[in-house]
Length: 61
Image 1 (spheres, rainbow, N blue to C red):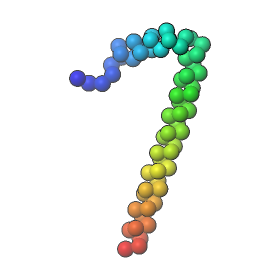
Image 2: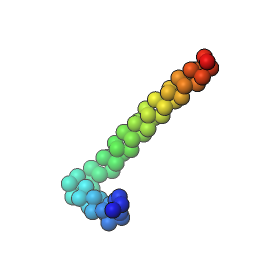
Image 3: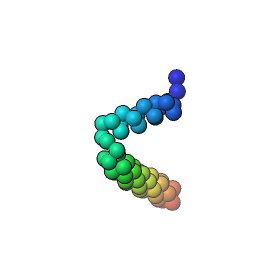
């Protein structure tokens, strides 16, 4: 069985609209987007630091 299909996304959207209402939904989407962006930047920073550490170890050899 595989993942979330288009019908599931539609149902989730309708439920979210019923729970939060049409005025609150854009605010929630914006907050979710900024949270996701911050998470992506933080994980990218961790990966970059890890790569830097590996390069330093290789140069020290």
